[in-house]
Length: 87
Image (cartoon, rainbow, N blue to C red):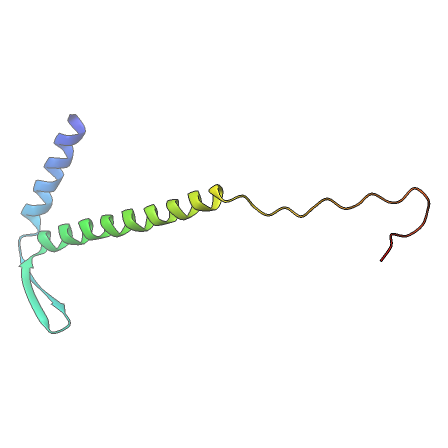
């Protein structure tokens, strides 16, 4: 509960200190928005991208563990009669 209160307080401080309007250019669009909104958007976008990529990586590793690795047959032991194996 205390951690949530601290996070909320820090969020309010971030919002109050970053109220100035910034212009964000995306190709031919110009989007004026408060700086705290831009920071929050980038934070959420980064979290979503990290979650998706991490989930994809975890799924790939799980699939690799599920498929058994091919193990070659063991080598044949040497012959007792001293001869060579027929070719």
